[in-house]
Image (cartoon, rainbow, N blue to C red; front, top):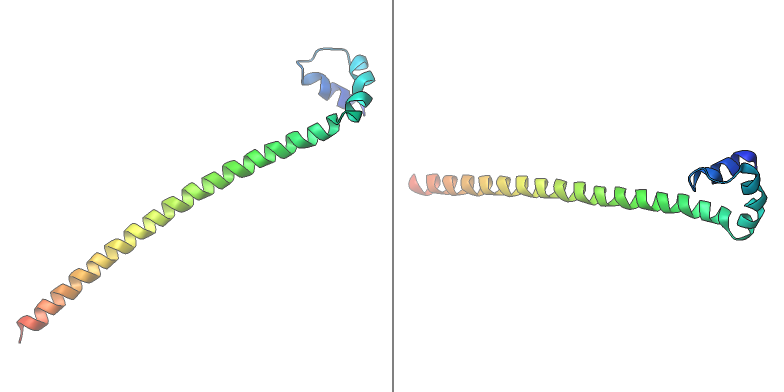
Length: 94
């Protein structure tokens, strides 16, 4: 791992420990899966983002569906009124 990596590791615990000490323990961290942990952190962040986006998508879709259903219901009511009016007009003119 590079010194940049050691510097990044140093920042995580609050910029404590010297870069030399951190660098000395990096191979140990690698053997224990610390590099995998970094990938998991990114993966968890992406999973969280995808989860939030999915939730937002569902909320927006539900709102859109309700809007379309309400408009459709209003159109059906208007059609029914028109049918009743036309029926009344036709039967009243006989």
